[in-house]
Length: 127
Image (cartoon, rainbow, N blue to C red; front, side, top):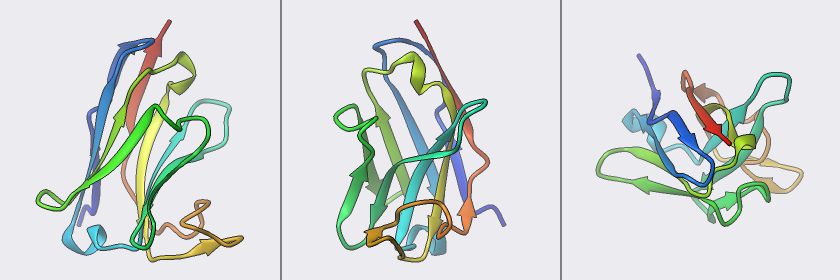
């Protein structure tokens, strides 16, 4: 049973926008932590945004002010609006879900607490 499916990736020029969506099964959508990760060749996987059921969304400095995540309860999706895209945003993007957890006191931080992953979608930003 597929529990998370990302969609919306593609190619865009620098400064442009893309919207990704992560569709979840009912059980997965109720997870305490849902997050967006990305990984580009030669780099470590980065968690840049997450949503937890206690505090709502949080963002990494690298995307703060440019990316916004939101939940659509009618569709069971965690959406990612990406604006002012930069070439360094080029990566494979993944969504993930897991029970509410803390790492070093920070809710939903890191990757180890996430136990359900999507297959990923590619984003390419050209200069």
